[in-house]
Length: 494
Ligand code: UDX
Ligand code: ADP
Image 1 (tube, protein in one colour):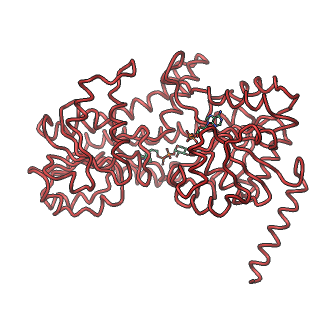
Image 2 (cartoon, helix red, strand yellow):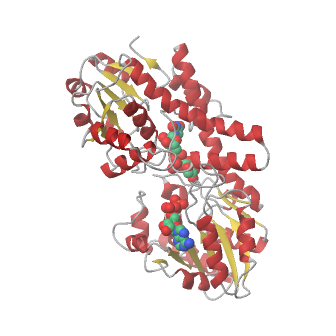
Image 3 (cartoon, rainbow, N blue to C red):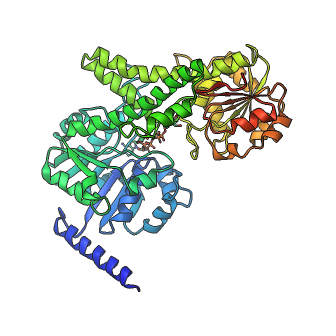
């Protein structure tokens, strides 16, 4: 053993000793996380990994999901997650469906269940559906004993803690509670890095003692200056505000991309120039066919609903514009494809490269590709779709979903439209075979390696390339004979 390892071990033992000195009960602290999903699973795996003195139990009502967490095929793919779960599972990281037992015996309970956009009743399409959070709170109220710290991990509308507190106030066994808000900022594909080295950890609450308990958990590996403590409502709102501001940056650069195309400016050059201003910074300024993902749209809609609820009409309209701009960008891209291909794509094969909402994930939630495909199908195009990670069943399910009507039904006409005009391919070149145009929807690295000559061989002439991510070597494609339309650059040959 080297001196470094020995010193490392001694420091770890010392920190375990110091931690145990502040423990609320028993020999070690016990955490329960309700919800073994995309957020709960990775977050708890990291806490267990970094805190050998804490026992972490992740519970879920979904037996299949729990079985998957206990198998070699985890239900969530994130680089680095499998290794961390394998190292800690069965030691201080456990996955189980014994929800009540774990609620009863834990010191701290994270609520990490899904909060989708409401699909019915008041606030339909905008407000977050809190039924799963409420069910969790009711379960805790029913079975908890003694004192518990409840941590809201799911993204929630501001003042949800109020609801949770009111439900908990009626606990069956005279249990007492402190409620904290601890929103998650992890992004898909980099979740483990984001958890390992977060820009900040945010903890909102009313009780200093409860806040300190959670600070102590994160202090195992996060520098103190990055752990921010606020009041409950600031913490809840900060999560929505962070996603709204990030999405707003993308809508801003996408709005500028349209102006660039009209004025023959180049959006990448403009983004670079403005990003050099240290007050603006270079990140999140990549123009695209539109942002997707499970959070941005949902959280903004949630914020819009909240503004309307508080009578802040102008504020609601301001944030809604970020979504409208995103919708416009997707429509603009599809319209440009149609216009460039002589105003009609009817009966023409178009290769759609990429279907995931960003690279390195198989997640398609709110992916721009879904909407571009819908618009092209409406124009009677034949689509040949290829994505390296998204399975055919998911692509078909997404297209059927986007065509569903107000009443949630898929019209027979639309079902046939999809069935007869969409094929799913196994490679980019297969999709491009005899296509009139090729559209890049997701910035997968492998698309950059496509040979312009091989692609040119495959497609009908004139050959059109539509780059919705600005990742291709446009010069090489033009030299090969393609007509290239790039987002924020326009038709490059003209
Ligand atoms: C986002 C937030 O980044 C994260 O902090 C929050 O917890 C969850 O929501 P995620 O949805 O995983 O994470 O992906 P992100 O990398 O933020 O990208 C969102 C969308 O914006 C993607 O469709 C991406 O392609 C697009 N995007 C991102 C751009 O179009 N341009 C950019 O410059 C950056
Ligand atoms: P997120 O992306 O927020 O993590 P997911 O949908 O991936 O959301 O995961 C949420 C998980 O929460 C699901 O596995 C679901 O079964 C679980 N869940 C929802 N309600 C409850 C509940 N009352 N008790 C236990 N687990 C729940």
